Amino acid sequence: MEMSFRWYGQDDPVTLQQIREIPGMQGIVTAVYDIPVGEAWPLERIEQLKKDVEDAGLHISVIESVPVHEDIKQGKPNRDALIENYKTTLRNLGEAGIPVVCYNFMPVFDWTRSDLNHDLPDGSKSLAFIKEDVERMDPVEGELSLPGWDSSYSKEEMKAILDYYRDNVDEEQLWENLEYFIKAIMPTAEAAGVKMAIHPDDPPYSIFGLPRIITNQEAVSRFLDIYDSEYNGITMCVGSYASDPKNDALAIMKYAIDRNRINFMHTRNVKRGDWGFQETAHLSEAGDIDMYAVIKMLVDADWQGALRPDHGRRIWGDQTVTPGYGLYDRALGATYFNGLYEAAMKAAGKTPNFGTTK
Figure 1 (spheres, helix red, strand yellow):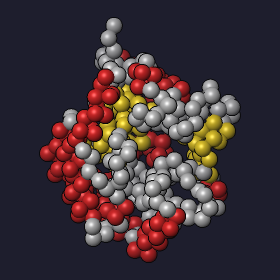
Figure 2 (cartoon, rainbow, N blue to C red; figure 1 turned 90 degrees about the vertical axis):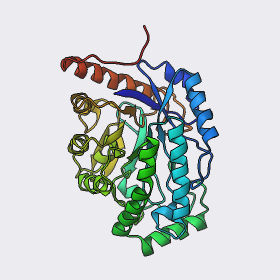
Figure 3 (tube, helix red, strand yellow; figure 1 turned 120 degrees about the horizontal axis):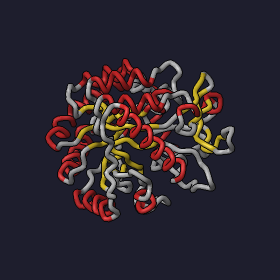
Figure 4 (spheres, one colour; figure 1 turned 60 degrees about the horizontal axis):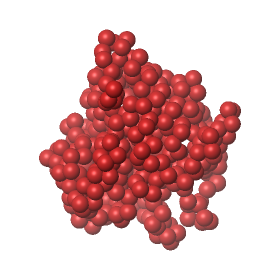
């Protein structure tokens, strides 16, 4: 297991030097953020990003993400040209030695929350999804805009995209469009040596009347069967899957790890119910996920991929530029998971490796 950390590039308030100082930190999860969705990433931009990270004494573990254009998700006639651009990006990432790409197939909206600063009992604040509040939201009317959403759309463009989905793309059609995409890109990903890791829908159920399909164990099974290769895998985001009370996140994880198809790990804890969910401190006791069981499963399987602590709480006056991605609580999470990893490794008679120099 390799500990990694999300970094949003040179404009991120959290610096590479700060990340490097977190004990046991080895990898960076990042992307080229200023290239419009649908365009190919030039090799020189990828190599510059890689150099920036390596100059700080770290390396790129995962690209998160190479976004999938809405016209691919909607199955529009121009999708083949967009897929060719995606394949070019994968070839360039492979040439630069990037081993994993995390991506998602969520219509229009990436992760969605109703409150970016919801109070927790200890006085800290975190991201929350309150269903009653979300049901009152309208992504077209008003000034609603949340992190994780593509801000390049005007209100008129967003309305047109939403209407198209509602009129033309139900869950089954979205599955067909995903299958078309996967079968098109995977031979290129395999040849480039780049493992793909689809992220679950966040939250893992429909919002704003849009279809969502990467939501549960049945969906994971169907997805993995589309293209039977270790290069066609998942991002096991325990917090996303666990956000639906109907899901057993540990059972989903066990299923995927037994198939050798977990290519990336996201670890955060949540409290969930019929009302929605709120992200919590990473401790098992703080939420509904047994985090020791998560790490032990990785150790027992001798899993060698990258894990990153996912969204953190806002504590100690941390930055609010990128909600969920402050330094302090994610650093605490990384240290906590490394502690669980060391304990589980030693209990199994194995030697932990944090990549540190004494």
